[in-house]
Length: 334
Image (cartoon, rainbow, N blue to C red):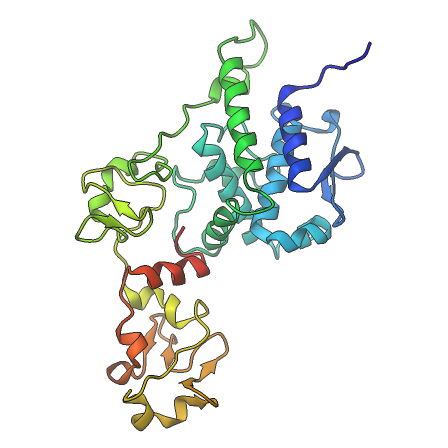
């Protein structure tokens, strides 16, 4: 014999992991373990549940790496503490990422997790990034944006696409007996939205049309897609209802690190204690990770010098280009 048979899904995901930068090996020393040096250990098949497979295990670990960022490849177990509950939100974020990425290809049931958090995964809504500003949802959005960058791009997407092709072919050949195959749960892939972005999961897509999205301007131009989109189109994956700046505050928080003062700004005369002067410019003082003029003590994000705010703040438009950048940096928007 010159060749050996291998499970086709294993072939896909072993290759994807290698291209992303991981060497996968099988060991019963741990259920799943990244060693921080490019190695990923997955338990042998006899240690997995009947609805588990190597492909799904690798996919889950890659979703962990997306949540923790590229630096996590240098940390054992992605830098997570598996001995306590302190990283539960990060685990929840991983499951949200897993549901959204798999859901794009109709694979949400096939590639579900095998962990003790499976109940959380199963109870996620069709849009797994709801509620919008929960900690795990924000972490998940940051991870989804990373999936389009190195080292994950384009290998992760290609592996999901290949998995969908294999799964839909296998679903046409049901086993004659035994427990139902997971392949019977494979759904149709999501269509491409008219904007060119991913369509939205669930029935809310039609209920929330593009007309009601925060990112579609009166002209019809969509800030997310950077093109004109008809008002009656069903919502895409990046749909958001109009939001109140007082509930967001991203621009005044850690999204931006400097508010530069322009000549003639009233803050110079009326609030000199808030200013920090440099050799060639002045800026508003920072208090930790936010603007020194921001008061969030009531749960709302209020500017204490709103009537005297600098020019750059006056020109900052709700749902404008800089607004979407700020929200993306904090994980509020995709």
